[in-house]
Length: 267
Image (cartoon, rainbow, N blue to C red; front, side, top):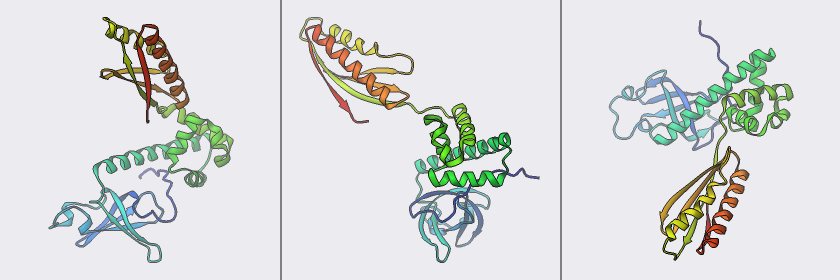
């Protein structure tokens, strides 16, 4: 007997232009019917002309019953319950991103099951909690991410303190914090005979800012430009480190008889 898995599905309809994941339920000569994995009781149709580019002799060479497919929503008609889908309009990048999102979401559902076992909550309760999370977030996984970065308090109003604490604990164990990068470049000049060495010495002052959690990288663009990239766990920390590095370098090049300025690059 197949083990029951927790799947939280959205109510309503997807939006026009949305990229969705589904399972092929029926394949007919004129098209394929796809059950939308993310939506409760929703099925869409991919016309044969939307399965692949070019002329299709046999649709069954392209899609088969039980196959997972990534589709773009072409049109919806809630009154008639119709959802028109396209497989060919989804590019490779969109396919990869959607598959990764769905894998993350399946992980999040499994984490909810684990919390349910810890707190003695049944599937019905977990589904209600999952639907609450989907009203507040793009996905259940996004809610776990928020708990990992911001702490359990952000979820307390949605799921209650006890459940929020469990979510934050699992999130911290399983979700690696995103690193942020900020960058800019120096324009440094020295007319001294050993000008290149003086510029190098000035740039080394930026590296003094590097410490636990802060990464500094210097790249040579082409005289007189040198790019600096600062990486940190938080945007504020990265910005502060970039500012300190900038001040260190400009102060040193001036001290060494050269000149310089700094230009901040957009993120």
